[in-house]
Length: 103
Image 1 (cartoon, rainbow, N blue to C red):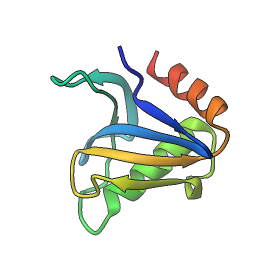
Image 2 (tube, rainbow, N blue to C red; image 1 turned 30 degrees about the horizontal axis):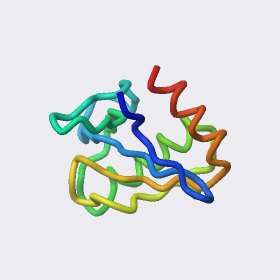
Image 3 (cartoon, rainbow, N blue to C red; image 1 turned 180 degrees about the horizontal axis):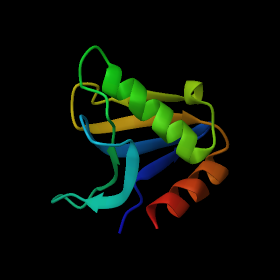
Image 4 (cartoon, helix red, strand yellow; image 1 turned 60 degrees about the vertical axis):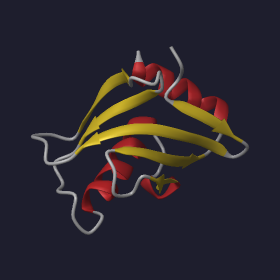
């Protein structure tokens, strides 16, 4: 199974499958798509209008990884369910935290 992230020089790119308008904000492990890519599954209560769901996702990921939400940003898939988030910080520490989240 591939990891749902890619390390970078100053952080990681995290691949997420987002479901908006959920009953709670939560992470639900890793999902493997038909093409073999891994995504961290996330649900947020926010609606996908005016960037509300993306902002809620950035806060959720920041909290889960123990980093400020300001270090998390959606860099790909802004209007899609499949998103790429860039998380700034020590790549080794962030990778370990994501692996802990994904089981």
